[in-house]
Amino acid sequence: MNRFSTIPCSLRLSSYVELIETNGRDRLLSQGRKLHAHFVTSGIARLTRIAAKLVSFYVECGEITYAKKVFDEMPKRDISGWVVMIGACSRNGYYQESLNVFKQMNGEGLKLDAFIVPSVLKASRDLLDQVFGKMIHCMVLKCSFESDGFIVSSLIDMYSKFGEVENARKVFSDLSGQDLVVFNAMISGYANNRQADEALKLVEDMKLVGIKPDIITWNALIAGFSHIGDDGKVSEIVEMMCLDGHKPDVVSWTSIISGLVHNFQNAKAFGAFKLMLSNGLYPNSATITTLLPACITFANVKYGKEIHGYSVVSGLEGHGFVRSALLDMYGKCGFISEAMILFHKTTKKTTVTFNSMIFCYANHGLSEKAVELFEQMEATGERLDHLTFTAILTACSHGGLTDLGQELFLLMQNKYRIEARLEHYACMVDLLGRAGKLVEAYEMIKAMPMEPDLFVWGTLLGACRNHGNMELARVAAEHLAELEPENSGNRLLLSSLYANAGSWESVVRMKKMIKKKKLSRVPGSSWVNTV
DNA sequence: ATCTTGTTTC
Image (tube, rainbow, N blue to C red):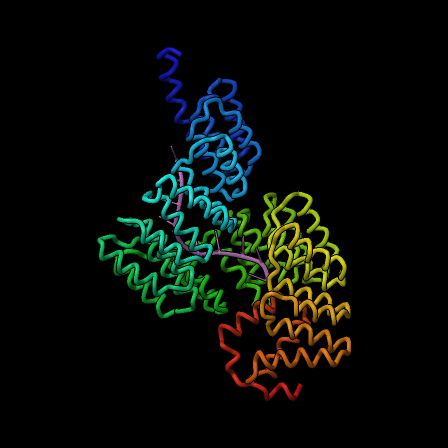
């Protein structure tokens, strides 16, 4: 190339880069493809900078396989190529792909690069892959990257998401000269682990070393106090941030709404939502996703439909989280066909999309449909998680698919290496109990590695009642009474009622409500005797 | 080229 061809070409290059970036952000796949074709014919597709942009463009459009192809064919692939590929995967939620490319990089004998680490930690975090995440931490120590603020904030964040807030604190304290981002990571670590007071203390520490909290700091505090239901403290924080010159933004409001929804204050949540609107702020995908579950409890679909309408006109309906929240809302409100339409409309189906749809079928007695979807998940290699199995086991017990349920319960543990949780055992007790296999159900309870709770015994009790086994019924009732001596009547009735309804969603809800309202301390046996 | 706030299924 002579200087006459390089100068205009490099000018065009930056506008091309900008175009391809814009198309990626707007998910304009067809336009990007045209640009790509143009790059190929004009010979600039081989330029490292252009190729890297094409890789992130295709990842952003969800064309992960194609992105990988462009990446593999990159002519001059230096470390930045790997950074772009792995970074784009992690940023767009393709965590397994991110780790796979990282493994490939290791396999090719390339050294660990500091720019790669945050993306790989993020992927481990979201996959809840403790083993892999800790291995990366070891590599970080070996490479002496532990004073890199980007890496430390990612480590703190990862450990916090694992629930290992002590490890997060260790990494935080080992760093000298923490910056704003590192403080924020630790503050939200405490906030998200129900230690909002610790988070607040850290804000004071931060001020002492001369770092001013920013909107992210304030929002982390709001989320922390809102989640534990401390409305008074939330108001205090909002006042403090205003005095500090920060107005609550969409994230602040979404956190407030989220806290209210999780603490069963749905009416207040809608109130906060209206207040947000009157403050001239527009809800985004997170706000919508947060508010949708609150619509379910209003016994009709009106609110949900309204929000659905808003998400259509605001262009948020296509958002992955919004989609699955809408699907779930319609499912819970009994609009199965609406849920199905949304399911089929979703081209980028995730584990959550499938899980929500399977739960929908399971809770409406469409067991065959649920099994069909489960098989589809397996066939397409979709990641199955503990909720997938709660959903499919629920479907099996509702549909009387006893053998299949037992088979899947083993498959979950042996093939998918998913540890059986309390819910899974509860499903199995229900499954066996409904089939009249009461002794096996009792054996299942005895085999549980954790303490069976009220709902498990309640399920057994219900099954015994239906099948007329008074002996086991007494055993179950005794355990119930033992678990809740001062209030057994109340709880016993609730447990068996809910367990008989067979909806684990209601069970979970009840459990949370009881925990929240400390119902166990309320003496209430008067109405039990009248039933 | 990399990181930190809010969001879905129990």
